[in-house]
Image 1: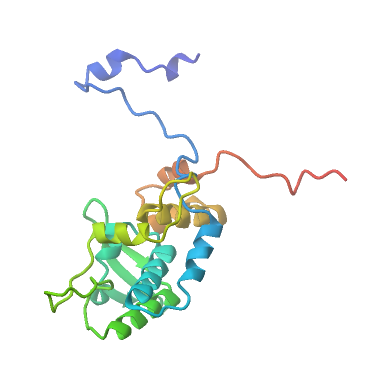
Image 2: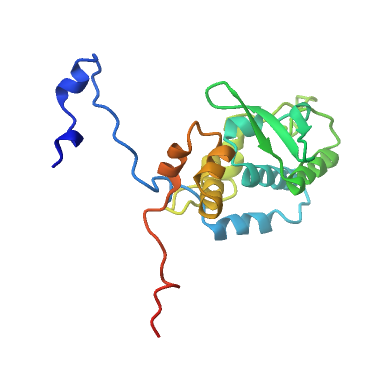
Length: 218
């Protein structure tokens, strides 16, 4: 064993820490935490023809989440007043990131149409993208909470690659894996607003390479 790779107890005792230094994450650690391509496609198809307010809201929520990779807290905080155009005329949204800083994400035109149709259906003007359902004793609507979004996504009755119940972050993982596979770690890092593409690569680089189409000898 290379002595340079050995973590000595004295190395972290001197710092006063009670825990040893963190070891690097293994490649592909998030591989099983996302949704499969087939599951994402199933959800998109299920929400194609909305008829009720819940249907319209589901379609709009999935449209935004599946094209931005935003965290649950970032999704529920989206506002129309934070949307602006890029120099290329893309629709951008400014949002509060994990840790308190500001991030910018490109909004998919079709997903924004879903949001507009949802608001047109409920007939309510609000700065927030997603609102609570009507309540008997309340006339006003309020922005959905992170917990509400978690329950909405759970109600879609899908599972992750590893067989666990769907949750908002599993959609983020699916989006990240798709972008990573097609465009690499820098593009994925920009989309997810990670501090470094190294972090992104550690999370989403697959620990295998599919050579089945290449290694054919007949």
